[in-house]
Image (cartoon, rainbow, N blue to C red; front, side, top):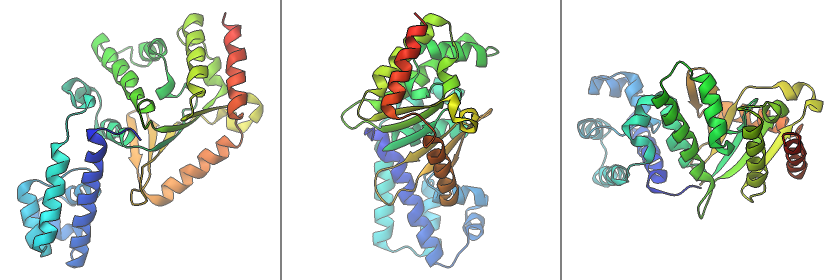
Length: 291
């Protein structure tokens, strides 16, 4: 797990949301009832209870009264909110990143940073956490050619800085799959792709990283290009999250049934992939073709 000040912030929001939901249910109230009392939409209550935001001070006082929270319950929730807000700022909280990434695409930074394990299927692209700067430049030059150079630079910086979760004393465990087409495509030219393949071999040799290629010989699985990530957190009380890439950015889901369905999909794809050592050998042989 990538441990820094923001790792705990997302859990603080989750714990506060779960506790407020518990108090609401104990009081026999619906989300609609709480929303009406606060003069907000039901979505706002749902957002708080799902750990996506802290309530404001005024909202919290009103909810305490509505839910008949006792002194100990109030003190515990207030302390957790205070602690959660005291954590320092992460790099992605700078305005230039907040402007470029919106909604779940922005929230994913917190989710990824808090992860213990990431199970990634990147489809026709090299997994983002394993991309070299030149590879990132090449895909941004095509995929964001309508954007300004400044916005492409911010995208590049974010992509590279995210890779810090793989390093440190307690790095995230990465189990990554991608299609053979992802490593055969000459993205950025032969020299860029050669460097990318060398980087993949180096990273795939780390103890916390498993990279497996789904070869063309696997048949139908080798053209399953939909990209997704399963995010598992430390502790038995923190449910997993699925991130799926859309044209408009990341979409996050934490419904247990959906997470199970996507996990089965990942396992099906993994069963058709080359083994870890076989993938490294495959990449080494492919890299020679670019010399």
